[in-house]
Length: 170
Image 1 (cartoon, rainbow, N blue to C red):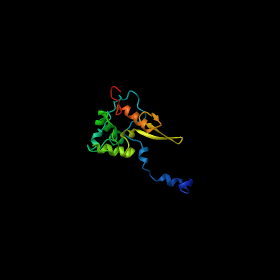
Image 2: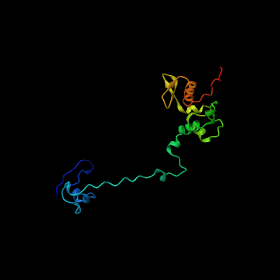
Image 3: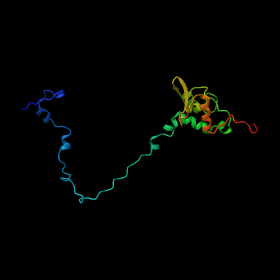
Image 4: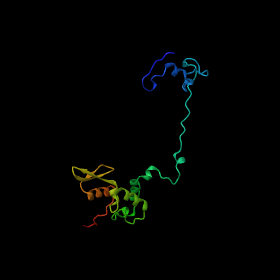
């Protein structure tokens, strides 16, 4: 019996002891009588088109009450609220987060993003500290200003909201 030693965890294990034990992979190495010997030539068979990939409708696995990932995003909830808000269409002043607006979901999402007391448009602005100075950046466009009121004005203008429009004749 040959005793060839290996390093590590196989140390002092005879070589033949390792090779004598059958492995689960031995059946994979055995010849398969159903397969022809050698490579098939090009004329042996016609290439069959592969069957179409079966796709699964994602609606099958999602219950109707479970929101999609896009609906879970608080910014999308607030954006949807702003686009359909009566104050936007009437060009009146936008409410602050926490005011009674009749949409509890939008209020909760906005409060999660910016806290109570801020404008709903603040949900689309992030604060940046640059060299000890706070600047405000639009999340969608990257537009940066140095004052929050200018950033809110930019957000209002992007939505076509003009609550401070001067009357005609001024």
